[in-house]
Amino acid sequence: KMACLQAWKWLNASLHISALQLVGGSKKVQNGLRFLEIHTLGDLANTTINALERKFRPEQMTDLQTSLVPFTKSYHDVLEELFDAVARGESFDLFVKRVMGSTLQAVATEYDVTREWVRQICAKTERKIMPLLSPLISELTDSNGARYLREEQIREYIDNEIYASAVIHTLREGEQFESFGSPLIFFEATSFPDVKNKLAELATDIVGDGINIFESADSIESSLEAAGYGFLNADDFLG
View 1 (tube, one colour):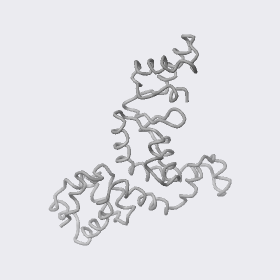
View 2 (cartoon, helix red, strand yellow):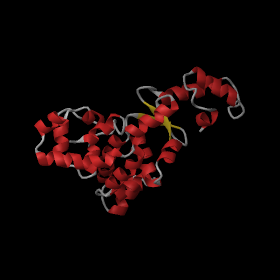
View 3 (spheres, one colour):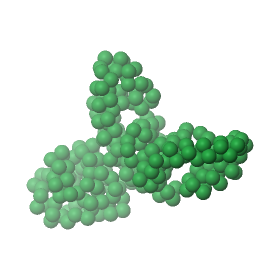
View 4 (cartoon, one colour):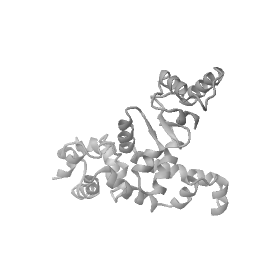
């Protein structure tokens, strides 16, 4: 029984269990998993069937198994399905307006609501999206060899332009990453604490040396390397 559980020892292991509810899983089952201190599909894969059967009734076990089926696919394949489920939620179109650059006031005026209501709807949607991003963050940061990722990587990974923009917006608004530059580079806050101020100080030091920053790419990149930001190039820094 529940043989597909073993798939998450390697596949989608870091995906949060809140994803199960997006594909029709029961909220009661999700709460039961939290009670068992199961927070990710990897935790679930490492939980014995006996432990689950002691917690859940037979119909709840059936519900759990049904909700797990989509996640036997790769994360890349299942991510768009998860976003489709988020997009069916209340006021996603309002959230998209913010994602695409509309101000709080502009959205509030269009929908005849308060700016605070818009802010709360956007925050609620971001809270749905953020738990879905752990595998994406891990895959992209691992490919970079450091705890950062680039906007271009996200847009290459996610085919749907609106969904990619929603991910970028959610990362920018959250606390896990600090963002810098244009296109954006996201630095994991714990790995690169106070990165914006440190890069601003570095810029001051470079300008203070009296160099023409637009003609001194090699010097800038040497300074970035020495400061621990060797993965940035001069164009990143000047952007």
